[in-house]
Length: 372
Ligand SMILES: Nc1ncnc2c1ncn2[C@@H]1O[C@H](COP(=O)(O)OP(=O)(O)O)[C@@H](O)[C@H]1O
Ligand SMILES: N[C@@H](CCC(=O)OP(=O)(O)O)C(=O)O
Image (cartoon, rainbow, N blue to C red):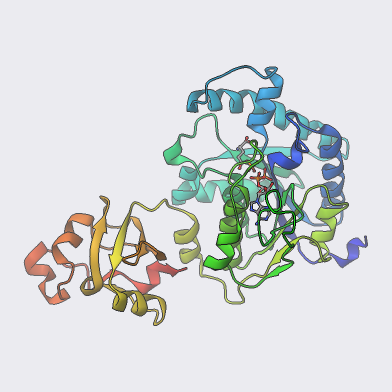
């Protein structure tokens, strides 16, 4: 491995529970040292590394000697609270073997949704990297409830890649990459080495986690890859046990599944719409409106809306679906759900008389919409 061949300067490495435990029920420290060795050699070669680590819940179980607990949110929070301190201690000790310091960032969706908190997290990441300290990110599971969770570290790592403007996201797991079927269920499944576009056919190939310890399986890795590549970040899914995998990924060797970044990435506002807020509701469109939005890149007008799902306010983010429920776009709405129920199917000339206010023709403006 020749580190002079380095192709990326700032990378986010996501390590799944499956990698950190090597498929067992406890942290595999011997393997963690090997991963630290690779990350340290990159840091020494001038690559800035951000680590997104899973494993807090697994570490909590191990530290408490596998207690019998009910599967409740509070018990998961308990395990994460105990395990996160063990996990960061382990990373801190292992990186110190290579003379490197680490800094911990525990995030929730709320930190990424709120502009000010987002900028604070970004400043903190940049400050750590500027000092040669490795930022180590995990979800703040001990306090995060379902509503404010990103929910899985694949999606969290993609958001971290956007947050720190990384050029590469490496998702390391227990499989050599994305296969054309779940290899645990289908021994003939074939590795897909390159992906130029993530569409519904590809999503159908990606199943959930079957290992019991992982969250999300390949499905959340594809979601993460889609968010990152639309923002101009290259993505590699590969096995965390493949020899020198981190160095190979960063030096552009052929390893795992490579997702090419879009040549014309989304502008930062649209990246934020895609990656930031939870959708608060849905707008159901007729066929003409679906075509206008997806094929012609038009704003969404009230005429083409057939249905409103959920209660939302002006400024909330919504899913834009067709009458079969298929999602075509995500966008920030200019009218509340109450308003839209009154104006759907109507022309914008009537908005003022019906609502007593008029925020413009577009219910969702094309500048506030990401077509999927
Ligand atoms: N098409 C696919 N290709 C590869 N793996 C898949 C696919 N569909 C589902 N999987 C499953 O995804 C699992 C990896 O996800 P997960 O268990 O969440 O790991 P991690 O802890 O690394 O995030 C694999 O063990 C595999 O069984
Ligand atoms: N935040 C959780 C991990 C969540 C997660 O996505 O796990 P994984 O699928 O193993 O990457 C933890 O530290 O246990």
